[in-house]
Image 1 (cartoon, rainbow, N blue to C red):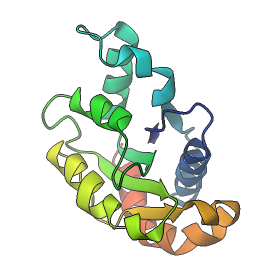
Image 2 (cartoon, one colour; image 1 turned 135 degrees about the vertical axis):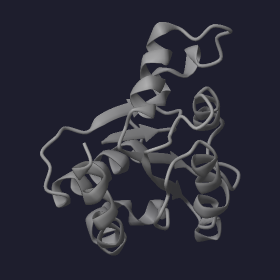
Image 3 (cartoon, rainbow, N blue to C red; image 1 turned 90 degrees about the horizontal axis):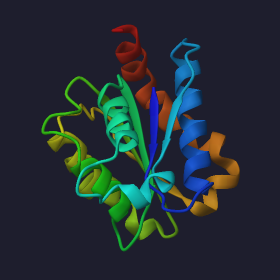
Image 4 (cartoon, rainbow, N blue to C red; image 1 turned 45 degrees about the vertical axis):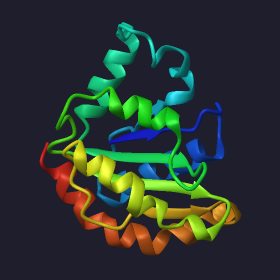
Length: 168
């Protein structure tokens, strides 16, 4: 499983939530594989290079090879960050075919909850990912009680995660 974090701030709360979500899902699926973390804040200065540096290409290949991909970011201006968009735009067409993608957006206001379904899900589907369950709109105010808030969503996505990880 890969956790892709599109927050421009290193060590963000979004990163912490993405890691916890991915690790919990791996455990619930009965796997002990480590979660691969892709923190785009570390790659940000190199993402717009005319020729992608080897480390950017390697990370894009790692993301494209994921069986399960948690795509997490903060909600900026009612949608996901430009950092996440730039990274995903650099993937080849249909690069996520065969990948189960789980979109997660962290937001300050519940009025942005639809951003996960209206903006992030279509991008992942355009890249070929299967997104069979609702994304997770996670309020910043709920981060201190993340495990409790995640329980219903994780129960809904766990069967798909289990099936995807079993296909290895």
